[in-house]
Every structure is written in structure tokens, then in C-alpha cells.
Image (tube, rainbow, N blue to C red; front, top):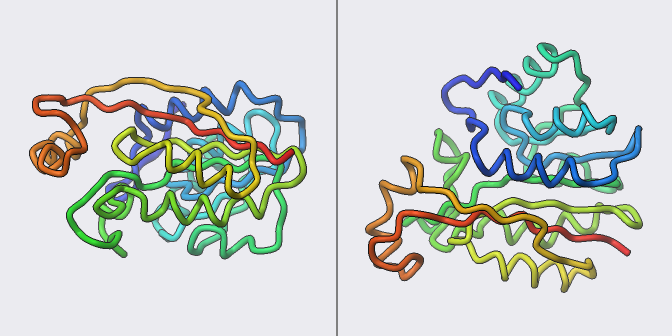
Length: 216
């Protein structure tokens, strides 16, 4: 799918592709209510719309939302765009499907950045600034039998995501895995990752993981 992606908006990469593959394996009925948390360019939201879902896409970045709107127009799809912090713009709503490709790259800064390109990937020293919040907030928005799909790196502790979703009452599993070589951001931090014990010396590969939770 061709997407517009101006500087400052996350470019759909291997993690996006893996999440879309997992999404396409779900039985998404026409008209299913879908929420995309941190939509970026709208790539995952548009994939859900292609399956017939009614999609609400949330992002804190005005530029990301403008980009998602343009990409929806380009592909003749409808996205309901909301600006705000994670689930705040849709508080009280219920969704049959929630998808998210949040920032998850470990970074030396103690908190996630509030502006700049790195906001799309930096997520604190353990990579979990956004993942932990999604694990607490997103399950509350799932309708009965609703599905939550989150993609992340192995460097950001997928087991912690699985545990958080189970504590929230979801039936949880790993729906997809894929190894990939480090891109520019990860390569630039490889020495620091080694110092933190996040990777063995000399390793320049991560595993991408899609965690799936179901509200029974």
C-alpha cells in the first residue's frame, strides 16, 4: 500500500507489516468497531478499514493525524480521527478490535519525548513507557469477545505485556513473531543496549512480537 509519510511521521516498517498480517488473520466482521492507538501514517487503520471495520484512529501528533487523513483520502477509505493521549479521546467507548504499534525502543532518557521525531519510537530505559499504559487502559475498552493486538520488540519485554493483559482479564498469547536486523535507530544504540544487558555482545537483531489478548 502506497502511503504518504512526511518527515516526523513514523514510516511503516517490519513491525507495521507483522501487525497487519496478524490483523488479517482475525475474523473481522463488516462494521466491526476498531481502534488504532498511535496511528501514525494510518497504515494499520487503513488495513482494518480494508477488512470492512469502522475505524477510529488516535494519535497525539497533529502531523500524524493530517497524514492519516490524507492517506485515507488517497485510498478512498473513511477513518474517524481523534487527537489525544492514547485512550483519552475515546474514553467510555467499546471496540471489537484494538490495534497498536506504539513506541517501544529503549532509550537513555527516563521518560518518552513529548515532541520531535523520536516521539514515534523512544519509550524510556526499558521501552515500556507506552506499553505499560496500553496494558492498563486498552482492555477496559474491549467489548465482549473483543481482540487487542500489540506489536513490540523483544528488547521491551513481551512477557511483561502478556502478564499485564492477563492481569486485566484477557486471554493472552503471542500471535506472531519475526526476527529482523536492527534499523538505523537500533543500530545507533547497540552499544548502549549491550551495556544495559538488553542484547548479548555483537547481536544486531531483534525479534518483533505481536501480543494478542481476547476479552472472553
